[in-house]
Amino acid sequence: MKTRLLPRYLALLVLLSVLFVSCKEQAKEQPEEPPLVQYNEPESALPIDKLKLPEGFKIEVYADSIDGARSMAMGDNGTLFVGTRNENTVYAIQDRDQDFKADKVIVLDTTLEVPNGIAFKDGALYVAEVGRLLRYDAIESQLSKVPEPTVVYDDYPTEFHHGWKYIAFGPDDKLYVPVGAPCNICDSTVVDERYATITRMDPDGSNREIYAHGVRNSVGFTWHPKTGDMYFTDNGRDMLGDDIPPCELNRVTETGQHFGYPFCHGGVVKDPEFGSQKDCAEFVAPVQALGAHVAPLGVKFASGNMFPEKYRNRAFIAEHGSWNRTEKVGYKLSTVQLENGKAVSYDTFLEGWLDESSQERFGRPVDLLFLEDGSLLISDDFGDAIYRVTYEGAELASR
View 1 (cartoon, rainbow, N blue to C red):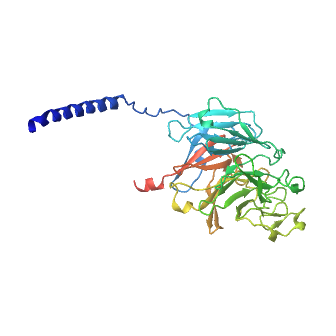
View 2 (view 1 turned 90 degrees about the vertical axis):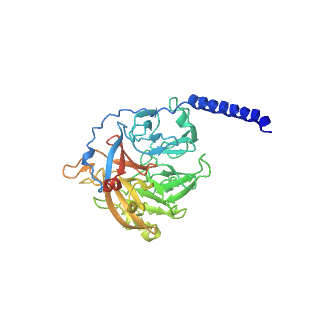
View 3 (view 1 turned 60 degrees about the vertical axis):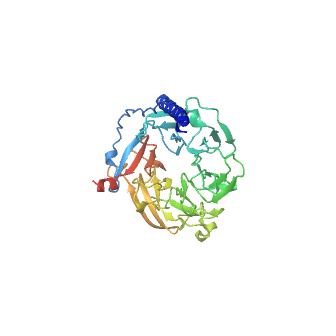
C-alpha cells in the first residue's frame, strides 16, 4: 500500500516545487512602485516671519507667484484649482512630491471674465464668471490639453460691481451662487430679484431658486459640519464713516430668509436712505457683527485632527482688509466660536500682513481651505501666494 502511494507523493512534491518557483518568478516580474521624485521649490521672498499665530502653529508658503490667487477648490487627485478676479486666469497647482509645497503650476485659461468662483464635483471643475458658469469635465486627466468647457448657464446679471462670484456645493449637492448688489447702496431687487441674494441650483443649472435675500456682497460661505446650516460672510456698505456699519457673519436656518440689505446693516444700523421703509426687527440679525470695513471673504470650519480641540467648533474667517478707511483694518484671519448656533467669542487667529504703524501691507487673505491632514491653506491676492498653516504643538510637547 505504501509503495503504491510513493509515486503520488513524489508527483505532489514536484508540482509544489514548480508552483513555488513560478510564484517567485512572478514576484520578480512585478515592477516596484517608483519612489516619488523630489522637486526643489524656490524659496519665497515674502516676509512671513512677520506673521503672528497662537503658540504651536506654523505658517509656510505653499505656492508663490500665483498672481491674484483667490478662490480655491481641491480636485479628487490632489490638484488645487485657483481662481482670480482681475487677472482673468484659472490655475491648476500640483504638489507632485507630496511635501506640501507646490512644484508645478499650470495656467488653464486666461480668457475668462473675472473667474473668481471655483468649485469641484464628480471630476469636473466649475468656474463662475460674472454672468456665466462653465464646467470642465474630467479636468484632472486633461491638464496638459484643457477641454472646451460646457456652458452651464449664461444668463446671470453681468454688472461688474460686486459681480464676481464665490461658488460652492452644499451638503444637499446643490451649487450655491451669490449675486451681489450692483452698487454701494441701492434697492436693486426692483431691477432683478436675484440681486443681493444667494441662489442655488442643481449641478446642471436647473431648478434654480433664491436661497437667501438681503445679502449685499457675500464672497464666502460654508456649512456647519454638525448642523448643516450655511454660514456666510457679508461685506457692509461704505460711506457711513470709519466705524459703521459692521461687516457680518450670518447663519441661514431656512430657505427664503432676509438679512437686511439695503434697509438694515449689522442687525442694528438703519440705512440713512432706505432704513425708514423697514424695521431692523424684520430681518435675521448676524450671528456675529464683525469689524467695520474688514471685508470678510472666505469662511471655513476646521476639519481633520491637526488643530487643537478648541478650534473644532470655530468659524475661521479671512478678513481681506479695508480699502478706504482712514486707518486700515482687517488683513488677518479671525475666528468666531459658536455654541448652539450663537457666537460666544470673536478673536484674532493670524495677523501681521498689515503694519499698523506704517500702514504698509504685504498680503490680503482671501479664501480658506482645510486639507485632509487638517492643515489650512490661505490664498492671498495681494502677495500672490498660497500659505499653509500647521499645528505642531503636540509634537513639540512630546519632545
